[in-house]
Amino acid sequence: MWEKRWFQFAILLLLAFIWGSSFILIKVGLRSFSNEQAAVIRIFLASVALIPFAVKNRKYFKRKDLKSLLIAGFIGSFFPAFLFTKAQTQIDSALAGILNSLTPVFTLVIGILFHRSKVKIRQLIGLFLGLTGAVGLVATGSGLTGITINYYALYIVLATLMYGVNINEVKSHLTHLTGIQITSFSFMFIGPAAFIYMLTLDFSQVADSPGWGWHLLALAALAVVGTSFALLLMNSLIRYTSAIFASSVTYIIPVFAILWGILDHEKIGVADIVFMVIILVGVYLINRQHRKNAKTI
Image 1 (cartoon, rainbow, N blue to C red):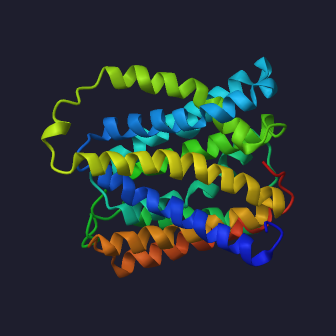
Image 2: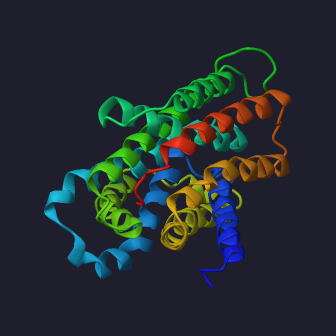
């Protein structure tokens, strides 16, 4: 089944739907939980779901990989989870989904600065376009009516910068492990950290929030489906196709994020669409050359 092209495209769309839906799930979770509570619940539940995979692959865990796995765990997942929930206390889920597509831009920047990655002129043009689109989205209010600085959008920009650091670390030092091994091993460290931090938070007000059970379910879906299940699909897709084909999910995620935002009555203006297109064109130019000879993760 996995060898069939139509099935591969179906999985690609399913992945885009899952990750594109993560931003609206965060928004739903924040209706009863604080941004810190939502982030820590997401990390903890995802780590619990990944325990069986860590146990199954424990023989592949090596001490020499500890530093890189800590970076993958804390820089690639733990801190970004808190940054996204913090940002979405003040910005729409659609905007969050659009800004998330900056990840390949920062992946290129970090690669050039710290990993001696070769750069093409086309990539530099893509980098300029991506950053231009990001500045345009950040330099707006929530309704995109007037020029004001939306500082909360900068939390997502910082999160995508961390994603860029993580991706380069994985490519440089963890290519001997599969995607699910990297994720399950790294969550072995951030899971306990999330649990300890969760014990310091006061959840007493949650019970007074109408529909808190559904909001917790949204966070659980975000953790289990949006992290564990999606990574299994992504790892299989790369195995049966290529990193180039699988990475094209980057371009589809914002579409689903925007559609969910519209269904939730978020305001999507012309400026949103223009800046999103600018970012995606930049990401396309970066990935077209950058992933041409990239190793499969």
